[in-house]
Length: 218
Image 1 (spheres, rainbow, N blue to C red):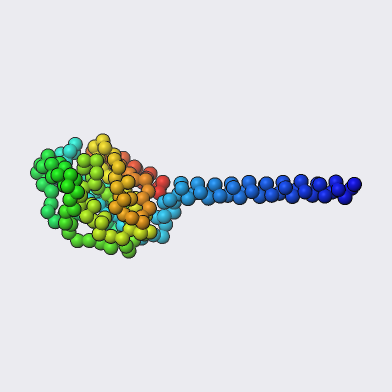
Image 2 (cartoon, rainbow, N blue to C red):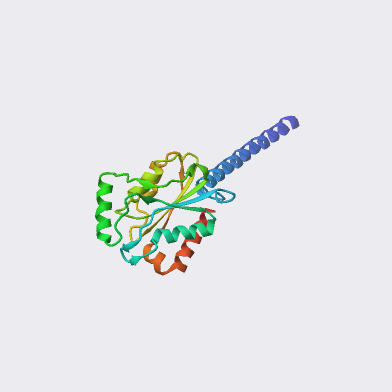
């Protein structure tokens, strides 16, 4: 009788141990999945080669008047300073008008409608970098078409892309999704949208926004 009771106690203890182990494994798995999902960019900037690519427009711009330094260029420089990244500007071979923002708007509308890919000057090997910040103004709820020209030139497999844009109310629109579609094999993280008026006229605030975003990405 004592032997039977002893065996029963051992069986119960064994079952409890198995259940406990299963629960622990489940917790570890869930925690691991959450860490993967929530930390795509965590520690990505540490010991990585960083590139800051941007397209920007000077001259007459909506909401900020006639500017000598583009809104997106200002934010790109801030990102470069905070991360130590290399800056590269996407420059179209046929520049957009600088004396009439309405003219720029009309050209951008037509280019988007026909999915144009305007030729751009120069290039840089994104393949040599680990993390690429990509910046642009929001034109018609999209990136300017020269940005697509640049993106489609390169192999993005294994790269981490951090989008950022300047705008006057449209935010990033759906550009994060469009970048992911154009850059097959890349991991696209949550982007940053800064108002052009803030970039031009409230630079301390713009820099705080940039630093907070990059701190989240770290």
